[in-house]
Length: 80
Length: 80
Image: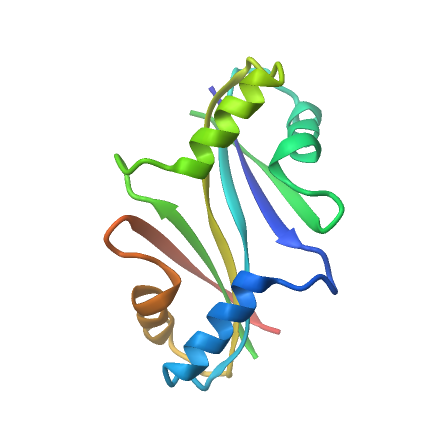
């Protein structure tokens, strides 16, 4: 199996509701040192050996991320 | 500002609904090379300089992760 890790984040300027909620909640809990919280997705993907990154990019564009509002970064972790 | 990145994943053996849904959807779209999809959270945290990792761990335990069903890993990214 080949392993990839994908980091999905909101594009710059797009409102991040879970991040904003967590940020406010942390400050309310007394964590005044918190300046910003952004919450994205951390996807661990296992695919058949030899699957090219291009194919994983296609999966991201079609299903795993929303290219309109999200950016993503793909990292090859290696064979598992 | 000090920056931390937190990776939240389901504990081994805990069912991962978003991952299972994405896995089935990818196979339905024809990506038969997909063996497993796990979806966790990727949190980017900015806090005041000098905030110790221990304090970030406390935020994870109290709010950012659910220690009953999730594991998390904290990485120090450095000053921003």
